[in-house]
Image (cartoon, rainbow, N blue to C red):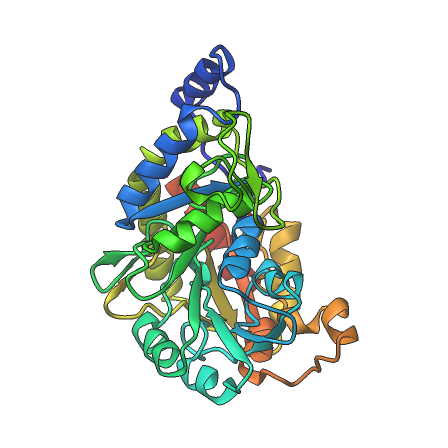
Length: 377
Ligand SMILES: *Cc1c(COP(=O)(O)O)cnc(C)c1O
């Protein structure tokens, strides 16, 4: 029996050709493909600037640094996400504050954000769960009122749309981050990006990506015109993405719309076929948004989730669980976070199952997931 994974990258011969070209060229890192990928990505999303980095996690880290998150400051995020969305706050010495999710979309609830704001709140990191955009307009209004920075964690949402604009346009936020991990919309192996419309953020992000160093004379603090001279202004990192990876990214970006279209088709088949079954709840789509359909997560009614999950795995269906609420992790418990803090998120965790969904998945794979699931209910 063939194993159907929950997600899978899509690499074709064009991707391989583009990567090989770079391997034969003069530059395998820090060459022309980096800016080319950044320009195309910014253009696709409708933002002024893009900075590509070595991972989505690196993107979150330097976005938080550039936002000026300092020890003792609070940043509000969702518990229903990958740990990286909150860890980036800890990297800066900040305190993650978890706001509960909406029952229907599993996205962060603006009402809950409002309740969590204190004098120490500095930023909000909303996550577009499963690829469905959050209530960005409401979040932006809260941020404006309290002078907060908004960093969208759009690791799931490259290709998604909110009120007619692409996620990544930063129309409702200060910065947006993407991940190019193989399971996300497009891949560079490992990789990520930060998009912004702020020149100031852009210039700082470029420096934080590369040791906090600049060669731009107009920025020098000391007076030295030797042509070997450079200056370090921040404690930056080596978070660069290579030309090899950017060539792959460029080639993948050309297929992005095709990938998203296929993801939406698969979700539609699931919606149609699964609506005939009792005992499950389907993901809820919001008006005014278009999901990138990174995940298709259903909820099991009653207490049968574990039994169904295990039965599906046993029959070769690579189901998954998104997510264990971040603050339930031992590391966060040891920091003092407690069970019960976000009841809607915990209830979601107790009932969710993510079904397979990836562009290469065939209709007959989707049908066999549906058939096997209906047999386990
Ligand atoms: C994948 C993911 C990240 C981290 O991205 P990496 O590229 O793996 O570092 C961050 N946030 C969310 C919500 C993710 O799904």
